[in-house]
Amino acid sequence: MATMNKFNNFLRAVLILLCFIPLVGFGACGVLGIFTAVITISTIPLVMGVAGLLICALLYKLIGKIASK
Picture 1 (tube, rainbow, N blue to C red):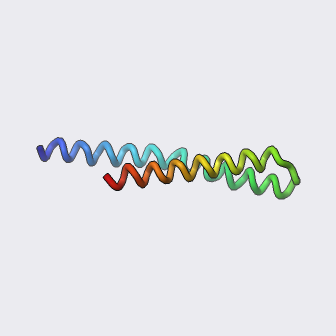
Picture 2 (picture 1 turned 90 degrees about the vertical axis):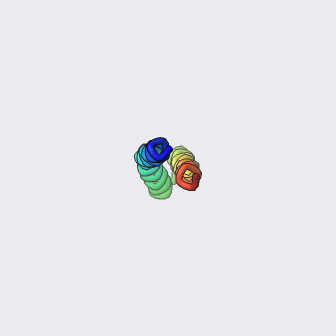
């Protein structure tokens, strides 16, 4: 039973690490999109920036759910 528990903890850690890569990417995309929208006064980068930050927030919630179990 202890081996299965160790495997579950290892799998949980791997899933959390795999979620961090797109979390950072979408977060950076969101910030750069909003920054570009402010400089160029355009709505397309703003929409893409908000979408990137929304995906980043959803991944953050997913990481929280995985870590809390």
